Length: 172
Image (cartoon, rainbow, N blue to C red; front, side, top):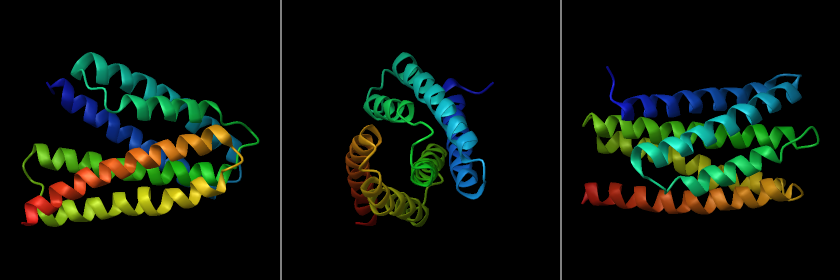
């Protein structure tokens, strides 16, 4: 039987894979509204349930602002939303979260080497710090999605800074 924290990380990883895949499929498929609705409903469900688990199981509150902003941003999406930017956002955000979750698993199993940590960090950094601002800039007319993106970006800067400090400390 897996302890609950292992089930939770598996839940997070599954969502990362599903959402980043749906984002990519939405970019490549003709029926974009279908993928938008799938992303919207699965994301709201995930962020709601994950928030409950974070609070009830771990008494961790650091991801709750991110989840609330993400839920509000998702709920604001509709048939007039800029599909391609929404799909790119999901791909960048969730595939980079996947790298952070893989890092967590490796760290927990004491198999996180500095080289792998650096590669995972660089992917996270590229997606969140370089890729997301481009998307955020291009959705400035979608106010909730725009300001939600800015909030996620600011949180990502904080997470990147913390992660970089850990890598720097390991190298020294």
